[in-house]
Length: 73
Image (tube, rainbow, N blue to C red; front, side, top):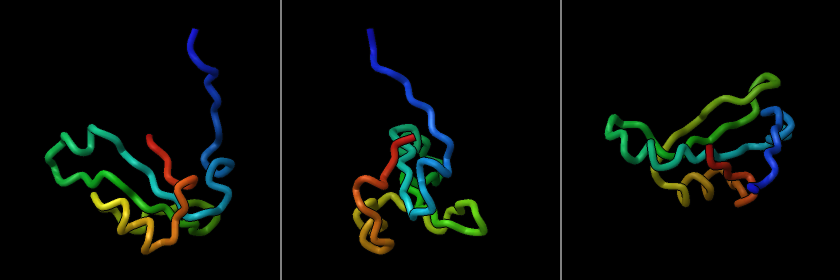
């Protein structure tokens, strides 16, 4: 019943790449200025958010993030 759950450490998952996270429907429903998408770039052996927006196409193009590097949280 159900699929296998696989856990990854953040750095294993991102492999030092620029990624975009999708905060999902809750961000859309919050109405409190929370943006749906965030761009994370490598910074000092970790990742830092460099920009957030509700426009995924804009962020993916600007930061050249491929579809396989967009993650839903």
